[in-house]
Length: 276
Image: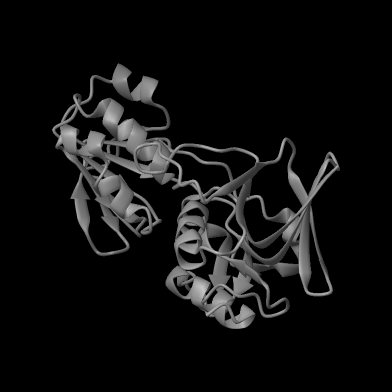
């Protein structure tokens, strides 16, 4: 069994999880920081990884989280790995956009999209790193490609990526999601309206479907918000019941129903631990 101790663990390699890990490494260079996930993926600019990161990859699902004497421990369901930390941020994934399957220009994989002989403007929505890779691969098939994601913190990596610059026709619409869509013939979607009030005309939509947030292991923190279970936090992502447990991304909501302001999360952790 592997037992390790960290000052901060970010649980989940979602967009927010990766970004918060990178920000924490810059903000707290003398602290031991780990990002933990069952599945790792690229998404670090041009596939580069900062040497300050410590990565742990579970071979099984994270199924248990315990709190004792001010420490948090997380365990895998094969009982081979237990990690301990002074603070934890739960960032276990983003929920994919959902659009009705009846529209002929909505696709869930690149193969079916290419089979439709696409052209014009493509909107890709979903997990940022996978979406940007898809945009690069499809850049010669469309006049314009928009990548729409809920993570604003990766926008600099995407904007300054060498490959994206070389393509010249890829734009990133950060920190937003599809609010509604417009159709004139009930068969295709002509444009989408984002929750930033931006309207994007589109000839095709590719949805990169990520896994659902794996938050069941954090049952004491979950509450129903509408039809979904969410980890309820304050504005900085801090859970009221356990002050050294934070949450960010799609798995979390504030008590008044807003997204967590991740710009406040690391400040709250630093203040609680007297790191500054």
